[in-house]
Amino acid sequence: MPDAFLDSSVVIGLFFRNRGERKVCEDAVPITATLYCSRYVIFEVSRGFLRNLINLHNISFEHESFADLHQAAHSGQLRFKRYAMETWLGAFDDYFAEMALEQGSIENGLDLFELRAKIRGWVRRGWRKMVTKCAIINDIGCRPDITAPFVRSDDLLDQRLPLEQCGQPTACELQSFMRGHASRAQSILDGLRRISNPDKETARRIEAIHHLSNMVPGKPFSGSNCHSCGDALICLESPSTMWVITKNGKHFEPLVGILRIGLSIAKPAKSTK
Image (cartoon, rainbow, N blue to C red):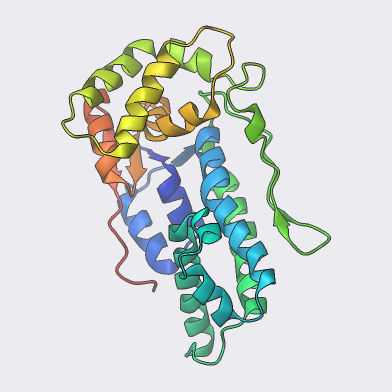
């Protein structure tokens, strides 16, 4: 059986989410497969999912009750829209699921202190599992020195990410990676351009791949182009002998079809149990 190269959605599902999410992700992994991940995926999880989860933990200190926070998160306020609501709603689902398992009911047990404790536990355990349960590769040359999230002296969660160094040739080896995969990157670009009416994410990916494929060697570039290429870079980095495992079939199916590599898609979870 092939080994498994995990994208960020499956890394999150396997190591940070509730039992239901873990189960559908586990079912998508080939039996006996060794789990592989990359530094690029770890950075993607950190700057996206983990940063939003950390923000939820820290913003909770601004509210007096769980009900107040929950209502504010659903209120449509612009300050909450800056963060990924999918991450926040998923965190609430995980909290409800754990409280129900522990107490048999969630009617009287919801409070901010408990929510913060749960989030800190998910972040701590999930990070440890992510970096120990997977064999990690780094063909892209992404930063290997990202530190684990930590609790500051003021009780807020934090993680120091060198986002300002994304796209700097002295700190990023993506230019070299793209030159080494020039023909395959061009195949992806040509294939995506043939898609009629591409969605916004695919349109951004086409533009970003074109930009990265035509970079002047040694010249800094915008880190947003690297981020927009996300799924394509994961497919380029995945060894041809492995299957890419994802929950995002919509955007990965065209990519693996172009590169002719294996793919397994985790189904949406129907329960948190």
